[in-house]
Image 1 (tube, rainbow over the protein chains, first blue to last red):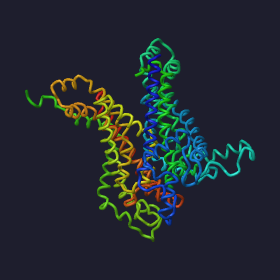
Image 2 (image 1 turned 90 degrees about the horizontal axis):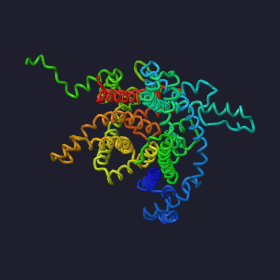
Image 3 (image 1 turned 120 degrees about the vertical axis):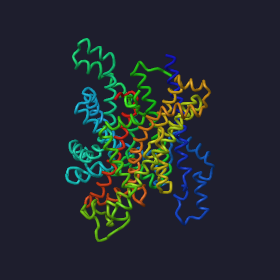
Length: 326
Length: 287
C-alpha cells in the first residue's frame, strides 16, 4: 500500500514538473518568435511614443522572464487574458467553440469503439483469414490516406451529389427543438455530421482496431486460455469469458489518452467543413497571430495530454493487479 | 575439402534482403518508390513543361493525351507540376525523418546509457515535447517563421523525435546490462566504442523500421501544412498543388484528386516498406 502511495505521489510530482515545462515552452514559442505583439495592435502610422505606451500598458517592455511570471501567475488563477484581436476573454472564446468539437469527437469516439472492438477481436481469432487480411489492408490505407484529401473527395463525389448532405457548418439557422421539434433537429444535425464524422472515423478507426487485435492475440496465446481450451470448455465461452475481458484491459487505459483527443479540434476537418469548433478557432488565431489565444491552445492542449497519460496510469493501477510500482 | 561442397555463407544483409523479398507488397512498394524518386530526380527531362509554365488558352482542362493530368486554373500542366512537386514532398520526408532520427537516437542513447539524473532530465524534456498537440505546434511555429523548405523540414523533424527517443532509450537500458557489454567494458573498451559498436549496432533494426515509417509520416504532415496554405510554392509541393485546386473542386476535381493520389501512394509505400523491413530484420522470426 505504501509503495502504491509512493508511486502515485512520484507520478503526480512528475506531472507538475511537466506542466511547468509545458507552460515555459508555450510562452517561449510566442515570445522568441520574430515580430512583436505591439505591431499587431497598432497600425502602420502609429508613432514610437504610441507604441511605447501600448508596450508599457501590456507589460511588453518588461524582461521576458518577468512577463512569463506575470502570465503564468494569471494562468494558474484560470485567467488566460484577452484576445488582442477581438478583446474577448480567451477562455470564453474557447468555451463558446468547445460544444461543437466535443459533439463531433464524442460521436466519433463511440462509433470507433463500437466498430473497432468487434473487428479487432474477430481478426485476432481468425488470424490470417481473409477477414484479417482485409482488416490489415484497411489499417494501412487508413494510416496512409491524407485526411484532407479523403474529405475533399467525399465532398465532391458524395456531398455535392446528394442534396440531403450539407457540406459546411453544423446546423441550419432557426432549426431548434423549440421551433421545429426534436425529430427535425436530429435530421438537420445528421445532414451536417455525416461527412466530417465519416472522415474522422475512417482515418482513426485503423489504429484502435490494430490495437484491439494485438491485445486479443496477446491474450489468446496466454497459458490460462490454453488451459481453458484444454479442459474442454466451449470455444465461445473461452473467447467471451476468458479472453475477451482481459483483452479489454489495455483498452480501458486508452480512455486516459482519449481525453486530450476529445477536446482537440482538428484544424483540417473543421476548416474544410466549416465546423465551428476549437480547431477552426485555433487556426484563425494562428493566422491572426493572436498571442494569448495561441499560448492558451498550446498550454491547454499539452496539459490535457499530460493529464490524460496520468489518468491512463492510474486506470491501469485499478484495472491490472499485476502492475509493479516503480 | 572441395570448396563447392561447403555451404555458402550468407551475410546479414543477404539474409535481410532474402526475407524482405518474400513480402510482396513491400517489394511492389519499393519499386513504386524507386520510380517516384527517379522521376523526381529526372524532373527536368521527364516533364514536358516547367512547373510554372502557364498557358491561358488552356485553363482548367481535364486530363487528355496532351496534358496527362489536365491543367490548372492558370493553364499549367498538372503532370509537370506534380513531378516537380515530388522533389519537395519526397525530400521533405527524407530530411525531416533524418533530423528526427538523429535527435531521437542521440537523446535516447544518452538517456538510456547514462541513466540517473541525465536520464530523468532528458526524459522529462522528451515528454514535454511529446505532449504538445503536434499539428497545432507546427502551425504555430511555421506561421511565425520565414516560409522555406528548410524551415519546414527542421520543424517537422524537431517535433517528431520523442517516440524514437523512447524506443532507443528502452533498447539501451536493456542492452547495457547484457553480459557481452560487461565483457567489453572489462577488457577496457571506451564508452564511445561500447555505445557505437556494441549497443547502437544492435538497436539498428527497430531504428530503421521506425525511420521508414517516419518518412511516410513526415510526407503526410508536410502535405497537411501545405494544404492549409503554409507550404512552399516554388516548386509547389503536392499539398500546395492540391490546395490550389480547392476553389475549383466542382469544375476541375482532378487538380485536387491527382496530387492526393501521389501523397497517398507514397505514404502507403513507405508504410509497407517499413512493414517488410520489420519482418525481415526481426531476429526472432525464423524464415
